[in-house]
Image 1 (cartoon, rainbow, N blue to C red):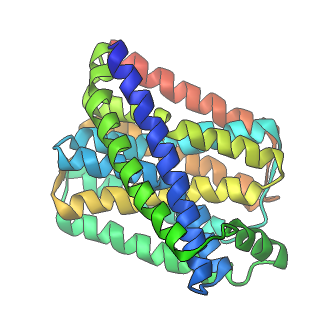
Image 2: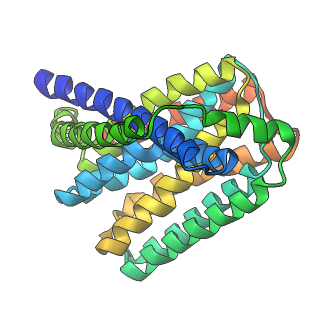
Length: 317
């Protein structure tokens, strides 16, 4: 198990490096092609941090580990809301000026409710997967349309996120390097996470929920804490909400659209409702003063720890 843990950690490192490389490559390429810095910034802030999870889930689905992929996709959302956002707010209160994030959060709520309804028969069909993908496209279009009316400060912050420069060949090289890093990182994680999970007595779904989801989120937690210290609340919440929408609608929807997806009973009763509960708790925090205080961050972290203990208790009993 020690060797598996070492290779698993190496895989997480490769995924983090690959995610960073593709963001830099996309940022630089967008500038070289004359694309809108603001629109590119919106997309990168909201969805780029999910690329390591996407790589892991593609690999897991490819080798037949759908339960691992499913656990990672939904577990990452709980980790996003509870650990990443909560830890960042504990370090420094988060002021959120990007108002389009509220509709995006509502899209996550709607997608979660749809997924619960779709999962009542224990299966997510291809048609239902396509419906989730369509909701992702609609949420993306809604966010971009709403974001155009944001304040000059938000435009400057999101446009400034696209700050990587370099020659065309360098940015293309970053894409190639990212593809290699993400491929081998995902391969190592998917190969060795089940060994670690089995050593802990976890089923594949729980291995994805806890081992993989928390492992792949740790770089995001560190980045969110650093952004909170710099007063970049929009970036922190944009990463968290955008990544959660990406995981739920694009990754889970895409898995089902490619192949009908069996859903464990606990998935409907506990895991999806847990992520939905975090989103519903977050809504009044943003609807009021658009500020997440330290105390609210503490509530999110405590709720995450309670969820984690519940999942571990369920394994033991």
